[in-house]
Length: 124
Image (cartoon, rainbow, N blue to C red; front, side, top):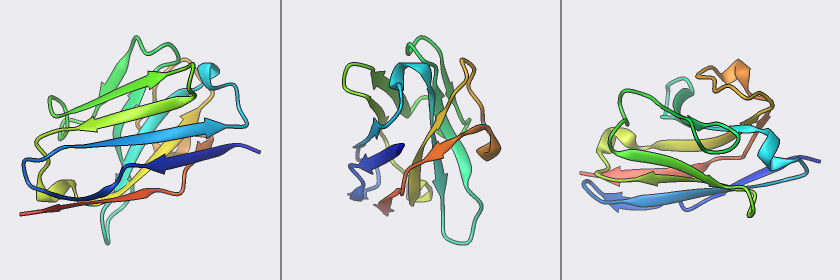
């Protein structure tokens, strides 16, 4: 079955950096657009970033553009989210998602598979 496994979360001070990884199995990774969402306590899950099948097109939420970078390595079935200049408001559970479409999507409904999430906590 399809599995998406995130790692790399943790506790970091404001201004610091983290790199999240998401390893996919059970699907043809290069056929899927990959997305990243976050969910803060008491809030709805929101779009963060997405990357198309070959990595040539990326999408970002306004709140992270210029600070976060999404990339992928199709040979390793892995998508990465490099997060720089982290802020306390970036604190959330981060989820990886896969979408069998060549186009990115900013909606939860647009994705077919989800990971279990990894916690990122940014202290002030």
